Structures are given as structure tokens and as C-alpha cells.
View 1 (cartoon, rainbow, N blue to C red):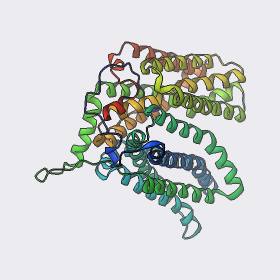
View 2: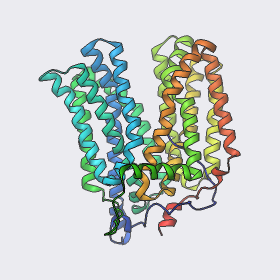
View 3: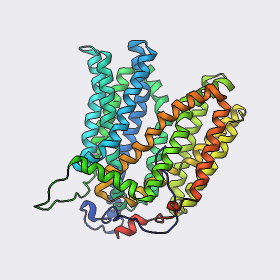
View 4: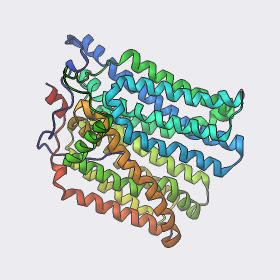
Length: 448
């Protein structure tokens, strides 16, 4: 789970507002009438399409590459090693790639990252069917793909505030649309990939994934304007990469609202990341003994996230942020408690749906606050760093959960996660940082 946050309608950002204005940031003429409004929404729709296609391609890959490894090596150990090769570089790229996004410009970085990532995916079936593909080469390609893909996502996050303001789309709605696209990809991508693997073969699914990167790159390159970039004075030396990186870290942890988001997101990732990867397979095996039941439970999580994100997109711009955030987190904790009692399958599926239904608004709400508080020149560094910090907690949580399952059992682990989750949510009520957020439309107001 990514950043979280909440708000009342108190202080403006501690730093300068992120974007310049609804027209100026990307150099567009002032619109006139409904036709101009529709035209100005084209960049936003193009960016949304690029994100959606890229996310769906990644969802295809999440099934196709492990299946490819099993088909070609027959080794479960090598399949797990391939998963690690795709995970660690993602965290590194988030932590260290943001400064490169800011240096190259988010539009250029998005296009370059998509094309390079697509090339690494395409190289897997290409080498396999021509010169042959050694396992170490596969690991290198998977790692490179993850390393290159992450800065592209960071870059599109950095562009989104400008195109949303340009098109008159509230940031809450724009971020909810992105969350819904991700949830839908996770919900439909693996089943579609499974069907495609059976029908056209694993290699062709990888070719299809490579094509999604090309589509994403073309949409951003052709339809999304470049945000403005800072121009150095004649006597002003270009800052070093490491100075850029330190500046991003300094801004993130120097702003107490962003710092609160980062800490809370890290703790919640530590608690929730093990659920799908470690706890639920054991839980469902013990309670129901059926892989089909696990599919229903995981699908319910995805469906709940999708419905929650769509609902936030509709109502989010009018909702009080602090109450929405903390209320959603608290409400999500109670279905987790229900899961610890091992109810019948129907109740388990309903509880899983409810958990992510209430969590659905959290990421788009947090993304909105980040976009409002972070200056445009620092977005790549700050966004990438925050996500990397939160992601680091996931593998630690998985290791701890694995040990805890052996010691206190699956019911005890789920109950512990639920209680800790509720405690974190309640602690946010006492944190003054969550009272210092702009209200709906803060970014547009600052731009105007």
C-alpha cells in the first residue's frame, strides 16, 4: 500500500505550491468554451490511458514470467529467485531514480523508461527463440525491466498534477482514476494472462506486454505536454546528482505532513503486505483447503479496492480528508478482526471485500496531498523516495509473518495484524500533522 494521509482545511503547504497555474505549467493557450475544455482534457486522458495500459501489461507479466520460468526450467527455486530479481531493483529505482526523473524531465523519463522496459521484456522471448536464453540472462533482463519501469511510474505521477489542473479535473478524482485502473489491472490481468498463456503461449504474452510499453510511450510522447523545468542562471553551477537526492530526502522528512504520511504508510505496509503473499494462502488452506477459495478471497480484495477507488473519485472532492482517511482505516480494521475468527467462506469473502473497500480512498487521497505539497521541481525525488521507504517494509513484514505463523498460528497472526492496524489508525487522531492539510481544490487554488 502506498502513502496515506488525511486533512482538515488548515495551513497551506510549508513549501512553495507545486504547479504554477492551470495553463502556464505546460504552455497552453487560455481555453475558450466547452471545446477548449475538452481539448485541455486530452493530456489527462492520454496520461490515464498510458498508466492503464502499462499497469495492465505489468499484471500480465506478473503471471507470464513466473510461468515462463517454470516452463523452461521446471524449478520452483528459480521461479522464486526471479521474483526477487524483479522486486529489489524496484525499491532501488524508487529510492534513487527520482532525482533522474527531475533531471531529465518527467515526460522524457516516462517515454525513455517505457521504451527501455519494453525492450527488456521483448528480449526474453526473442533470445529464447533465437540464440537461447540462459537463466542468468533472464535474471538480468527481469532486474533491468524492474529498474527501468519504476522511474516511468514516478515520472507519470509527477506529470499528473499539471495535466489534471489543465483539464479541470480535481486531483482527488484524477488519483482515484489511477487507483481504479491499478485495481482493475490486478483484478483482471492475471486471469486474462492465464487465458492468453493457454491460447497463444507464454512467449506471445510477453510480446504483448512489450507492446503495452510501446503504446504507453507513444501516448505520453504524442499527447502529453512537457511540464516546465527550472532554468539555471548563467553563473549557477548545475547541482550534483547526490545533492539532488539529498534535497528530495530533506524535503520529504522536513515537511511534517509528508513525514507522517511516510511513517504511517511504512507501518501499514509492514502489517498488510504479508496478507496476500504469506498469510492468506496458509489461512485458506487451513480453513477451506481449496485454491479456488483463495482465488475468491484475493479477487474480493481487488474488487473492494476498485469499488472504493471509484466511490472516492465520485465523492472525494467534497469529503473532509482527515475524517475520510482515519475513518476508512478504522473501518478496514474491523473486517480484519472478523477474519481472525475464521468465519465461513462467504463471510471471509465479504470481509476481504470490505477491507479494501474502506482502504480504496487511502492511496488517491494521499497522492493528492503529496501533489499539493511538493514543488514541481522535486516531485520525482520526493514521490520516489516516499514510495521506496514504504515498500521496504513489505519484505520485512513477510519475513516476520512467516515466523509468526509457526509460533502463534494463522488466527493469532491475523488478529495481531488487525489489532496493530486499529492501533495505528487511532494514533493518527492524536497526530497534529494530519490536521495540516489543504482542503479539496488546494492545488488549483494555489495555481490560480
